[in-house]
Length: 193
Image (cartoon, rainbow, N blue to C red; front, side):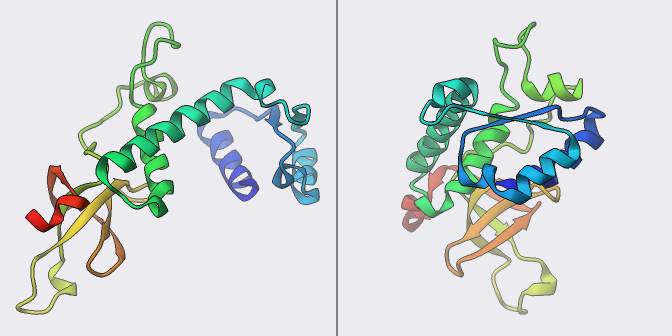
């Protein structure tokens, strides 16, 4: 988590022209590591620690974490996606939540629109864990090979404009913009396709 804090803090400060003033955390070892504390001190960021064994002091974060984990769990169970894909499910749950209207924001808006001052584009949203036929580029397939592999939709790619898939036949992951989705079919139904 601390490597991500360091990486993402620079991105936040650059994108939003706002300096991080305080960092609140529990007393997890990763947040008490000497290099992380030194990094916070060098930036002049105040480190606020909760009292041991009192997660309620970080209530909003704990509640948000519980909600997001619940959504990710529901998506995985609903689609029959193996538990090892929890990180993809959680990332997609966050993506969806950031594009869903919230009554906490006044007037009601999405977190994304509040931060970016524009309506989010949700045209790439699909049902998590649904099956899709994912196009195989001609440069990577043999002459008589299939033009599409059966894949499982795992979310929106972060670093490129595309969808993330897992291809069960090979165990490989693939990012693609070309896919035909079966949004009512899931991994447990794959024998019927």
